[in-house]
Image (cartoon, rainbow, N blue to C red; front, top):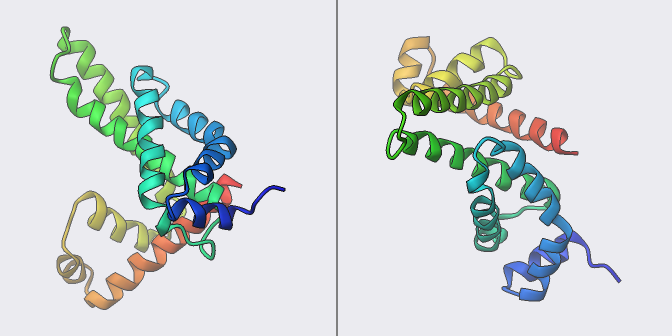
Length: 178
């Protein structure tokens, strides 16, 4: 008899290694496909990233909330964001140890373009006002009070728009993974 994802997550959160093995059996292919897709240009880091994803799942399974998403979608999100972190790390490290600076520059620019495109496609799902607030907060790293001043709104309004925008993006991400 196969156990439910919720039960599997609870058992894994209680450090049941057999449950974790079952989780890997069920979702290992999903993890690999997401990581391999996002790191297709840096294959030497794919296996390290998969291992890192499994470690993150083991360490953070207690944060999984079945009321917010399915276990499959939660695992998919962990895999996607770890792979993006690996891309960023690779971009930073390209300047060190790359024998040909032109190649390093081209690779770094290509990967940065991919990351920017992923962020841009996510932000396209927001209204123009919310998109601008997200860009100021998360890309330009502006403080909430400064954004409020710039837009003529209150800090509470900015927090509210960011919160609603994150919820909307989270819902879209979950639908995308189904």
